[in-house]
Length: 335
Image 1 (cartoon, rainbow, N blue to C red):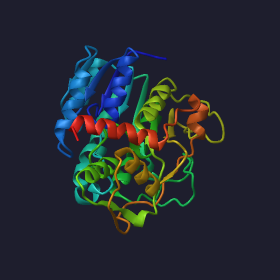
Image 2: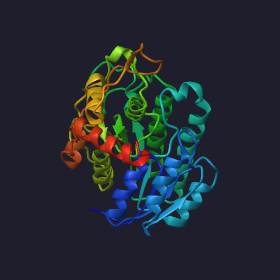
Image 3: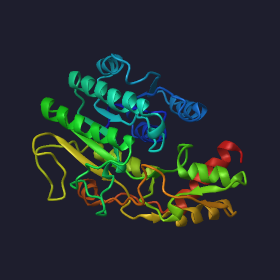
Image 4: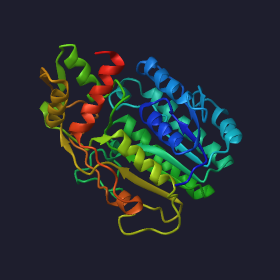
């Protein structure tokens, strides 16, 4: 496994924190940039960052990636071997209320990173996309070679734009770029705006939980350390000139590839709620609601490409993963 210098954008976020921890264990020197924005409780981001800063091989930079010159200066200074771009304004529903923040962080921020990588090319640049780009696709499981031209939310639209932007830079400047599409990531230190966090908090406080589409939802829930394992293994698989088979999304004109990171096994939302009730030892009061704007009823990853590239990933089952989150939540919030 390769080691060296890594730059992680969004390093104090949920996924960035877990990835930084893993790379530090592997012997990497890690620089993490994060704006510590108040989209959700900043204290949680500070707590993650404090853990990372206890390692002498971690350097924290508190800046916005969309600020001109910040990433260019950081790349010139650090000259990282690996760049993992996780910083973004997240959330499907929030993008309806505050689209401007998605333009700034997701579009402008990613542009500044691409320009910085053009000036100081890493060995491999990895950029986070999302399963939301599959949008209105009815065919499942979602394969990387499927069209993704009908986004259902502005968040998804900005991520699809990131993919197109990255492809152009990969082609023009021979930058090896892997875009990875996440599928409903969950686990300890997760985001408070996501369903697992909100459900656990509500049940413990004796409040009802909101169940959209009357519970007829399926998600390809991916435990965070399984996802990180995929990112780490893909790190040493920079796109080259040769496709590995008909399922490969490798561009014919650029060192660029899109890869799903998911379990390939969707779970019903009500089964997910049952796992939460079991882990907490108490029942949830459920408030059944219609589908929300911008949401989709199901996600399901075709995992054949990532398996062909790096072998099978660990697959933490939902009952185990939810129980680990509940254990963390109770300890962190003394609940």
